[in-house]
Length: 486
Ligand SMILES: [Zn+2]
Image (cartoon, rainbow, N blue to C red; front, side):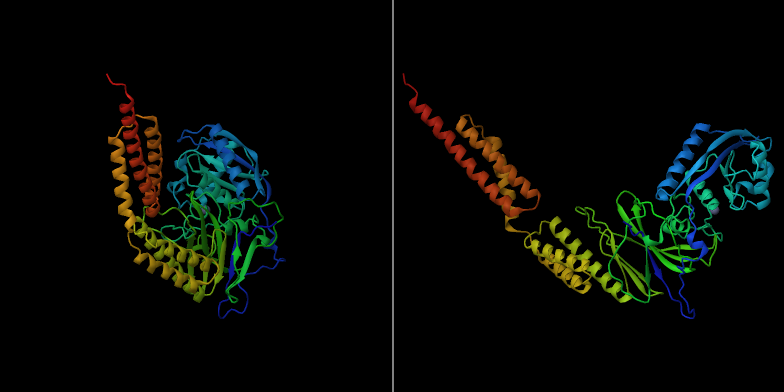
């Protein structure tokens, strides 16, 4: 069983007479997989001017957490072996490596000097086997030399920084921008773009060979619309399978789904330009979509963010359900967007009517809305739009039913009378229990805004109360009559 994780949308640029995405299985890069055990040493080095503040135990725990994260994100394909070693003491001072060693602008020279000091403190040869992550004291900036298989982080760095630098050792590029303010065009979607994120996007997972070619649907932007596609979340487990090809073309769109906070799934649409290179903006988040069916009662805010429209390359991504989407033309996207707007408007209108007790004939509006959703999920966006507009109109016409006031008055009145009457005879007390039960049913129906039903229960409660009162009176009367006189 192969689950589909990603959709790649192929682009054909005018003036370029070839497909932009190269999925040639003979491409040497295509068979690359960073899989299996990765021998890794984490080496703890304390500089003379910065006493350590972390214990070996706590850094070992961090190493285990990172290993677990790699194992999960690679779908069980990659894990770390090796050990955490240290602390080692260096006679060098961190400040001796220059003022930029604690800044993003860290120079190659100062980085190599720091690395050299860390190596000699630990007694480790640079060409000894395994990848090495030096964890140093002080505010040293994190960096990595992929060709040497060595990275540096400081002991206070978050797991995100460790995973980011390790990502470089695995061959991943920076996805944040070197220019300007070093912004993250991935919108926190990839730890290579922002270390506040701790996971890799589909793009990086493809690069590492963790997502197999057969788990990717490739859609040709020239042959739209595409039939309904079902894609799984990136967070789901994938059965171990041999990864094969990766997409190596320079420009394409990538669609992926993953869990978002605790609530559900979010669909991400990325533009990928591999001509850009590390730090040049390879991966750009161009849109997100959410399929949320959360409770909206009590709030008139509702956001149905189901349609992504790409105006330059002329295609749309339309969400149809938790797992389903369609890659369509701009025209189908615009029709779908219109339908979604109408659906949202109708839903808000129905909620608002219900909120203000205008429930008479509101079931007709609800039925129209239901049919509108059926049409939407069946890709009949025009029908969905029409039905949603009908639902909106019906909700606008809904009025407060007479039974609202009647049932409310009856519930209040029966409640008061029950409070003021005390029944002493067993017959009347039994009836009183029935009054209470009917009143409870009336209250429940009322709070659920089923006012007609509430009225029936309240009337029943009122009638029973009358019977109880008469029963009480007659039993007491009989008792008086049979009382012996004298
Ligand atoms: Zn980096």
